[in-house]
Length: 191
Image (cartoon, rainbow, N blue to C red; front, side):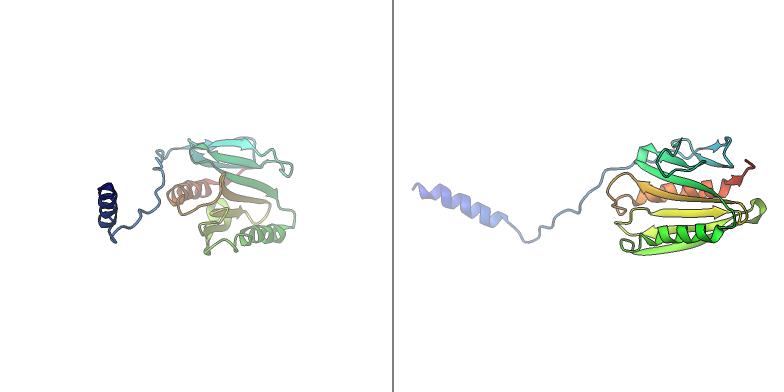
């Protein structure tokens, strides 16, 4: 008689299980994207461009930083666009090779790297834009721009967390549009 409740509970456990169970896919937090508005970065630097109002610009203070290097921080997304500037003195090919090398370092983690030319002859801005795809790629977006004579800039987007570009895909696409706007509005200025 004492075993009857135990058998009843075991019977309920065995009959209540079904083979139709499948776990839910992993969920991610909802990301609220801000309204797009831009402001002009115009200072004593040899370039100017428009960037989002929800981003902050600071001078690059790393040991390797050179004059006119900046970091554009997208605080709502914990991301930074590292933006470097070089003066061309007969060494454009070296800067181009460096840019290609830095992009190619992502090959082991990338599924694909596509590149697109950027040409704006009216403002003397030419370059390449790299879209780096892959869930573990550290930098999903990089570019370089030059006037081919005296000025060269390079940008690389990094998130300040372990890469998981599948979950960050909406943010990456959102920031790509902002960076495309920045590239389209970049202008050279005399120093």
